[in-house]
Length: 163
Image 1 (cartoon, rainbow, N blue to C red):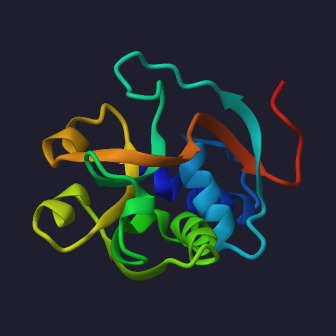
Image 2: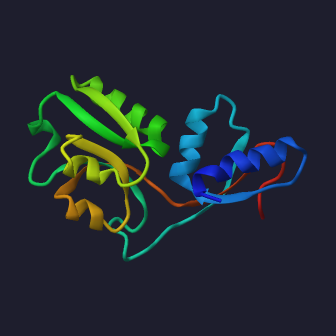
């Protein structure tokens, strides 16, 4: 199953009285926790993600914009395209920017979010950066790192931790 589905599946199994743990990305687990009032899950173990091919050594949720510019040099009203699976994490981050006077027209999409910039549909983006290849291909750069993600083993809040 997809990493973003793991927390839902583990919780459903636990709610059905079955013993369950899951492996997913910390980014996806945090998004799940923001979506659910009572997630019923916790991190049992964190496994550091180290990949020399990854731009930041691990998947990193980033704010990206046009190469050679900075967020402070852009207009205060911006069209932002957000990877749909990070809706809550992005909202939390964008709220901080709104407190600094920015206003956003938000679009959420699945798939190649970077293409929305290339097609003129977005001024800035929020998406996971891994190698940075698609970012560079679309003449974008990272303005801010929102969340670096490691692997996490998750399980129900009721029950013991892993040894």
